[in-house]
Image 1 (cartoon, rainbow, N blue to C red):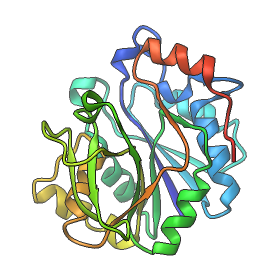
Image 2 (image 1 turned 180 degrees about the vertical axis):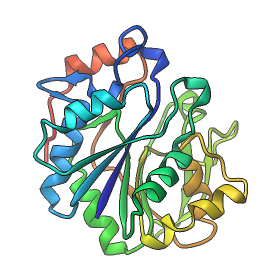
Image 3 (image 1 turned 90 degrees about the horizontal axis):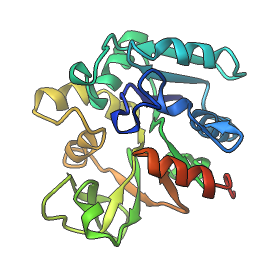
Length: 245
């Protein structure tokens, strides 16, 4: 299995900290954000290669980081240099798949979040379902719901509908940027884009996909820390204690 790590954003809300440095390589505790993610996922023993999808501006930083890791890590440069010319997450995934001729099931994750639980639980859930999967968590704040991907599910966790940043969210179930694509699902990305699927938010593909084939949402077994601005980064560095289990 390949793990694709979305890391081509420009993190403009964290300037000047990230003006010339990628957010996924910021330190939280004694590791970078990417170290927390990769070191945890590696314990499941199912991932044989990590593909970091970067923009051109930050690619060198990721290449230097990759040299320090024991895992097989490939850095893909999407060729963009500004926030205004970014490809968007969905096109970045397609770019990496085509450039590296990737096959099989894939774990696709945002490289700028830290979790207090192991992602191996999500990998286990997804492989048992043998279907595209995401995670979900219950968001009580109505204002935050407006900025999220929101899912409606049935009793089997199957996604009935998903919307990105809807002005009228249907539920309180939010979808963080962690995805499991079967080979069938990843082969449908180009079709989705041609069909008008949004390409900036990674959840847009899932919103399209769940109407085509069975797609499931596992309830998140812990907490996700989103680092969106300087205040949130400062707060996470203070409170984060690592992965519990």
